Length: 194
Image (cartoon, rainbow, N blue to C red; front, side, top):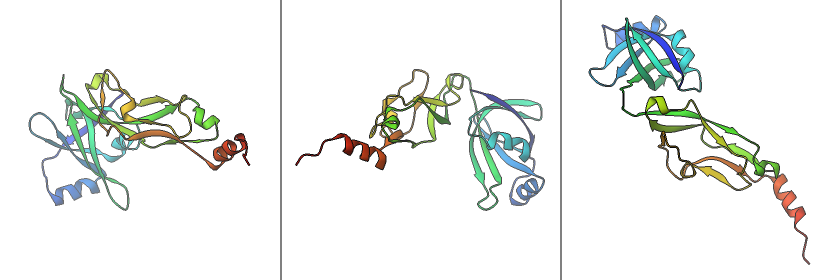
């Protein structure tokens, strides 16, 4: 998994007024959870935006006033109108403890169903996985070459030795749907019986 370094400044004042002041200074209030007491800090909105505005998942090395904390971004709250980040929760990574992250799904290959006139559809853009941080991939790469019209790839069809997928077993990740063109081609291929 890729790593990213971010700096933070400890927050001394908590509460609504202090939080509003932090946001007015183009900073984001953040909390680091994990072993021990939660650490309240702020981060530069522009710098943190490099990690927020990407589909990738990173291991983040938080440098909070000289102390380094390996962490992952757990939750982000956005403003409903302006879409600015309002608050970020981080989870500290502990050695030997599994973490839960959401990673992007990428499809590769030319599906047989698409060659037959079907339409490939990515149903889940991200999947939730659990495992040791050093064993987690940057993305879930799925080969769709053998998927035909009307078939799909579900969570239960996948298994990996280094991590577990936590989404429901019957959740569809990708499928090839029938299109009018595919139906027309199938109808033309079958001879009419009178």
